Length: 168
Image (cartoon, rainbow, N blue to C red; front, top):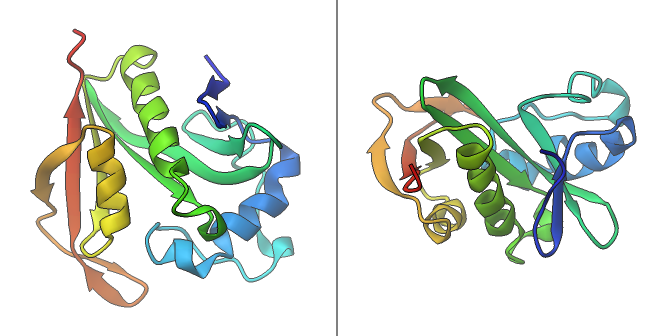
C-alpha cells in the first residue's frame, strides 16, 4: 500500500527524522497555517511529533529526488463510503504543482485501496489556490458549510468540493 508514488513525490508514513521538516514546513509556517487548520508551534522542542509517527490517516509528502518532507496529506471523518481529505505543502514549495500531484494520487488511493465512493475536501473562501487544486483533481462544488468556522480569531466560511468514484 505505502509508499504511494507520483512522478516527483512519495507519500509515505512519517519517520521520527521528519520532525524538523514538519515543524519548518507545517506547524511553524504561518502562511500554511492561514489556509490549513493546525496549531502553530513556536519552537521545535514544543512539537510533540511522536503522535504522527506510524499514523494510519496522516502521511508525509516527500520530494522523490531528495526524500525531503515538504508537506502532509490526510483523510478523516470516514463514514460509510465517504471521507474528507486535506493537504498542506510548505509555502516554500507552493506554485510548483506539488499539492495537485499529491492530491490526485491520494484520491486514487482513497478510492482503490480504502474503498471510498465519495471524497470531500474543503477550503476557506478566498483560498483560490486550494480551490484550483481540487478542480484540477476533478472535484466539483458540493456545498458551503452551514456555520462559519472560527479560526485564528476570524469567522471563515468553508466551501466543500467532492469527487465520486466512477470505477464502481
